[in-house]
Image 1: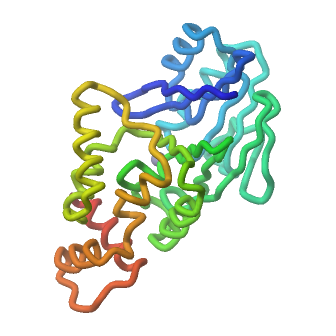
Image 2 (image 1 turned 90 degrees about the horizontal axis):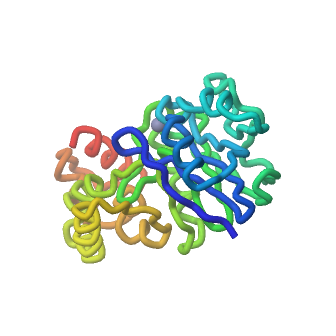
Length: 258
Ligand SMILES: [Zn+2]
């Protein structure tokens, strides 16, 4: 039985803490150490591992300090990246991994797009997807191509609908503001927007989401929808009809300038 809790950091990052009943914990993408150290102390958890999705500073900046803060042997799992020298276990989608320290297995999914070597972890029906999939949105495409990002999101969309989605940022409300421009007639999206707005007014976290929820409301997973294709065409003055990948490419461009 795993417990998953958010550790807020910076303006809107969530460092996810996964712990077992033996009070052992791994953290996902510790961009900062101080919040993690404080959290572990308060919950009396022992840090045994770190999972990294990609090399950006707000996801790896705390690794060094965490490693030097504890005597325990802390394993660092992550993608094959020269930019993350602290990794002790390079992992990819070829083989399932077993996180000994936590006693659980994890599936790694390669999700190129936001960065080239970005990976996601699927642990016991829980998806830790870094900056690839957000609730109501997706990550910016910094290193990969739109096609690669589209393919990565398709892999995540194909997971069981009950899969819980633990995103790395609290972007939901601003994503939904954009989503409503792209698909204003989606009643499920309108309902979700009202719910999220209320949650944020109460300073509540909007995560985890689920794959089923995202398929209903996330325009980046719905580029086959006529209304989104039509809005994108209008926005960019396109005369030809769009296929799903073209629609995704233009939708991401639109979001970049939104
Ligand atoms: Zn990033």
